[in-house]
Amino acid sequence: MSAKIKTVQTEQFSMDYVCFGTGEKTFVILPGLSVFRVGEFADSVEVAYEPFADDFSVYLFDRRNELPASYSVSQMADDTALAMKTLGLKDICLFGASQGGMIAMTIAIRYPELIRNMVLGSTSPYVRDAQLSGLKSWVDLAKDNDKAGLFLKFGEMIYAPDAYHEMQKAMLGAASIAKDEDLERFVVLAKASEGFDVTSELGQIKCPVLVLGSEDDAVLGAKASRDLFAGLEGHCKAELFMYNGYGHAAYDMAPDYKERLIRFFLQN
Image (spheres, rainbow, N blue to C red):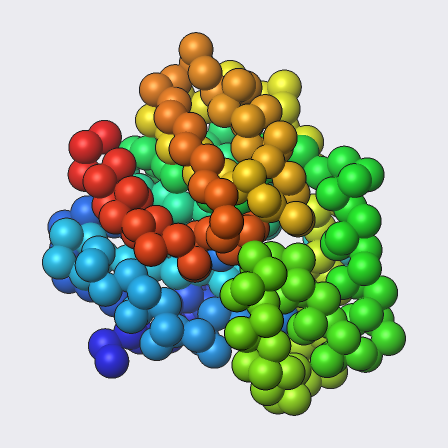
């Protein structure tokens, strides 16, 4: 595999990222919430996004290494934008999934000069009480150091039932190698979504945007994707496509997902 795990250093923090591909266009992935760092799944990401490697130079960013005790999506966006600027990235094709989508839309609002176009997958412009209940269940399990319980609950919520049934053994295997410090970091990152709401600022996004939602999203809900699209429509070139049958993790499970991303990025 050719994926390289690197670290970008700013005056305030360091941030790990994975890079691969040789294309002229810049493609940045902001992943959703995870117990593990991006380096742990660098090879699998390279395999999944192999179709991008000829047309794009691909960057997968983690959250910052030096986490404050309290951290917000807004701060994540500022940090990620600074990391991208430090690396000299510009004219970016940006893909954010779940919490990564929240970071992505915040970057597009605050740093529009960085973004060429954007895909937002299984995400929401807000996090409200109904959505917080699932996040809080993850946080409680992590605080109790119930690694198996956390991974199973996480998988149950993000995957469709059939996929979750097939992946339970793998989820338990992942839980067995998770470290205590991984769970401590996860708690800070999960709580970062509390209070997130950029609904009133969506009209500031001017780049072309593709919203990919899921009718059976058990984490953030299908309504969130529709509300996101409604907030963008009329302000920028916006498209909406809703999957069904793949759960919140449609970005990993839908067989045509990557092709939709490539087509959108190359045509916009």
